[in-house]
Amino acid sequence: MLGVFTVEGRWCRHVVLAFIAINLIVLLNAILHDPRFGYDAPGHIAYVKTLADRRLPTPADSHEFFSPPLPYVPAAIAWKLFDGASSEGRQIAALKTAQLVQFLGSIVTCWSVLAIAKLIRADRWMALASLIALGMVPAYYRTFAMVRGEPMMVALLMLGTYHALRCFAVDRPTVIRAGVAGLFLGGAMLSRQWALLALPALALVGVWRLVVDSETRRPTFVAALVILVTSATVGGWFYVHLHQEYGSMRAFNRAPEEELESKESDVSPSVFRSLLHAPVRHAYQDHPAWLFYADTWGDYWRYFLISARDQKGRLVKSVQTDRLVRSGKAKSSNSFTMPAYLGRVCVVSIVPSVFLLSGLGFGLWQLKTWRTKQFPVSAGCPGTVTPDPRPHGDESRVSEYDAQTPEPCGGACVLPVIAMMTVTSLAGYVWFVWTYPNDHLDTVKASYMLQILPLLAISAAAMWCALRDRSPRFAKGVGICVLLVLLHNLPAMVTRYSIL
Image 1 (cartoon, helix red, strand yellow):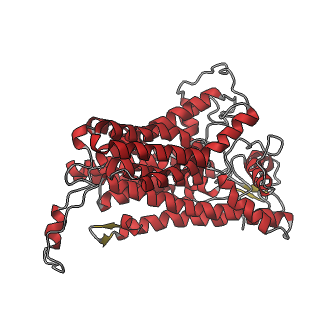
Image 2: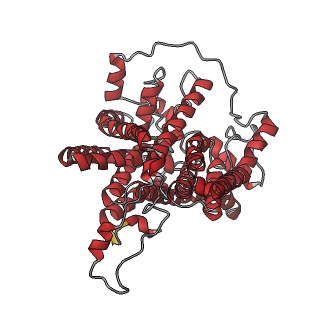
Image 3: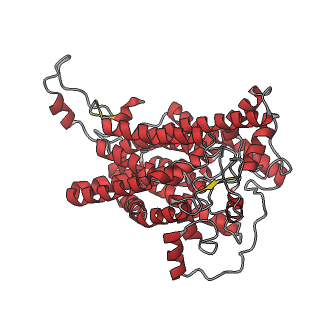
């Protein structure tokens, strides 16, 4: 497990420091953020209470009844354990338990990013760039601070992706590796429906291996069957439940609607003024793409950074903040200063946005390298072991031997698969927003697409490393710009909804 932090047997201290820094911020938010505030927080809290009674919620219990139950299990267990505490203390203890479990999920997510990145390119720059690309996005920290399903889903999806890629793109397919991959992917399905959007692209690598590698066709077929059966057994039962109880496996808290009457959504000067001065709630009701951008880099829905307290020092809901401030009854609020800062964040974040999207394009471009002749189990590639030519105990030729050891070539198909997982996830999400329209675009939230952040980070890191090979100076300039933006955006990564 610690191998993701090493290259050629040596620890990469910068990678370790980046890993620690990201997860320390996640831990800080888990401690500070009041878990009663967040996207659809009342529904998630009601889900925990219902699950603590050992039953799945109905629409009468929670408007999140359609969400899979796995992420709520730790909080439900804590709810039962703190049976003797006061109602508020019991609730806080249960929800804090969920936040700390999500902190562990962040550790798993970052580890998986490093592990997959190493399949593409085993050097410290690839590892470091992957973590920086992931850790520079404020939406990552905001989502892991809130009690909801996406953090656990992403952690399990990334673990399942790593083992599936090892099974079909790097090593010889085995039942054990396939079973592990199926277990994690099934857990992701049992955490949030968004995981299903990434699976079609991930399945392609198994189909590809089955078609082009005649020598391992039987174990490949068996491994694919094991993944399918295991994941369906672990996560599929909940979707059967939805179909039986509500008539559809894609049940939601409102019925699909016809497309609402289209409104003007041209890029007018007011859009840019809002982006610069106040990219927050109500600014982009007619602009889903701009809303998603503002929520990714800022806090559009105002559940994390823009807050207010009443005269008794209690946090108020985001929809009540403006009214409380205008009435002069707010004891404290940052609603006047924070939007301007978030405007600057959104403007400077154009740089890392281009960086991430360029990485996606680079990953898709690598589809042209996905050819049969580059099959990874060919001589010298992962799945085979190159014998050490040195006599036992002879360390005199370490550098020579390490230099001759072949690089992992699983990246020939790993990177395109990662890019396609991003595309299918985004395409499925666009379909969802289109199917469930709303005047306020309340289905447009960056947290819903948390899974694309680690995927984009890996693709962007691979692109940056390829750029560094060709033009070190230009790559250095890009890296410096991204780091400067990260430093500017750092305050946007820590909650202002402090429970302390």
